[in-house]
Image (cartoon, rainbow, N blue to C red; front, side, top):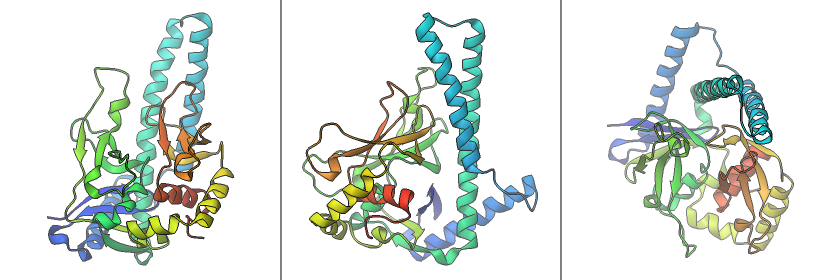
Length: 305
């Protein structure tokens, strides 16, 4: 049985394919995309367009700014009026609604792009030598990947490898974004192992880092000149927003920062942090694939210049 497993915005589509038939990946994604667009047009009209994701993202930031202002009032006054408490609840509901719209719009945009430009994609069967493809997606809230327990979106995580050895597919797993919910009544700690067999990715052809092996990418990155170039380019974006990586608590774009203390390695220098004071949400850029993905999002090209 073949089915779409997840959508990685701007990169590609993850699919489970029976018998490791890599040629089936494109067909699975095509079928999913055409069905999604048909349902969208039936609901909203033949000429309807998805809501602009930048507009939705801006709405999320506006809602968040008001939320922050009320929280500052709480700290200053030692409490809130009933009116402010009610408004905080309204803002939380609005934020979740806008985030749902944000995901829907991104999903529709991804489907339109693939169905309209199928030649811009190629299929790859995932194995250990392609594990870096998953690292390329780290930090994103994944579209179309819902928690089996609560229905919230999930995201990719992986086990730590303190020895610095290359990751394998078995190191990755899915985690529910509900884990970061403050309310114990609706907190969700569900996780799901990543399938390590018969998994393919239909991805953009203009991402050369996905067309080499995990080992080759590490060898290329090991060149001193490559590391110096990456470090310089990434530093040019310090304190900039990454609009594709949202805080899983506040649903706002995370900010690129450089660690105050690091070991001198580029893989230990940079991270994305939530702009909220006191929020501990971070995405560490600790692999060549993650650095490549960040530079691709900001400059249109990764570590292969």
